[in-house]
Image (cartoon, rainbow, N blue to C red; front, side):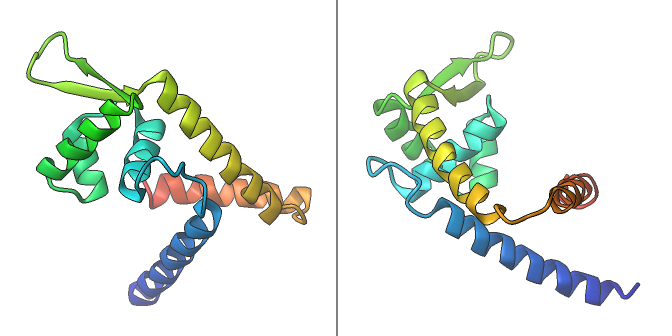
Length: 142
């Protein structure tokens, strides 16, 4: 297999994923938070508990910007900070109850759009999509 062609196919696929993500998540976030804050909350939702450094790395934010956004999310009672019992310098971040409610509402909205998108898929299509997602997750997006 031509690896250059495979790379270009991957770039095209990634762009399509970004486009679909934008379509699915458009208007999903609460008006009380910024898009950056929503992205942080989405990451925390999927990976919690996480450290500020992990958030910074994943969201491509500097540590000062990450700290500022986490402070704002904490002031809005959307996240909780937990100190590591073994290393008191280390903090973990997780959603608060209010944060869980907000993200559950956002994910329900996104799920509704996703279900609309796959409404005409056959059972076989859904099995194939499921297998393809598993394969991509294990072989490429690990």
